[in-house]
Amino acid sequence: MLLSDEEITNLYVTTVKRPAEYFELYQVLPPCPVASWNYSWNGRDFPRTRIILDFRDWINKYGIVSNDIGVTCKNDPEVEFIPYTTLTEIPYPPNDLHVVGETYPSSFDFFLFSQTLEHLQDPSVAIKSVYETLKPGGYCFTSVPTNNIPHSTPYHYGGYNPMGLAIMFVHAGFEIKEIGQWGNRAYIAKMFEMGCWPDYAQIQQNGVVTNEEFNVCQCWILAQKPVLSNNKDDSRVR
Picture 1 (cartoon, one colour):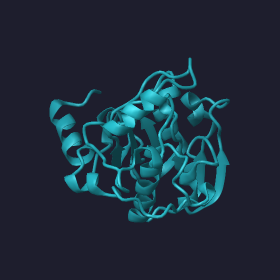
Picture 2: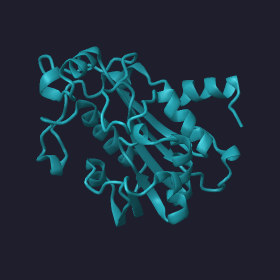
Picture 3: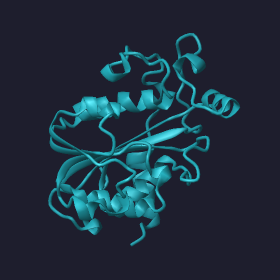
């Protein structure tokens, strides 16, 4: 069932639209907390930097501890910030996220897949399938480009803005806990000029990197499967 205009507006105002202070966060980067990156921001696609800082903050905010985590890549830096007992790696490819719920039904209390939706033929089907892998109350996190250069062609199909990401997760039955975004014109210009992904050193100006609300480059989401119901019609945004 499609959302009504009122539901769309409520989703945007209460969940997707971030306050001004959000865009002021981390304009001056703290020390890199990622052990697998040798605690250095250099040489990394800059939006991933901002994703990791939000991810770490959200894990702490919601006190998330996972017994069973499913990931598409065990080397994703976000994995370092989730306390877990058992990790199951389900790499995509060769595994098909469109049907992962059939292979791992109600198996995980956290599912992490980053930088993947733009490579899926039917992201809505895949998100619903990921939903089916989760136990009631389980969390899912993903990030996706909004503006990007073509990569992994021909398996690169597009990008999503924060509202589009939220809509897909709501239709799959999730409760939206957090939506994040980052981007600026300097990054966009340099990305298309160089044909690769700029890092902190290439876009910082006097140690500052701005986050411009209407120049989104990447967005990300933390969502939860409802505790009391598996019915997507019972889902609520926060």
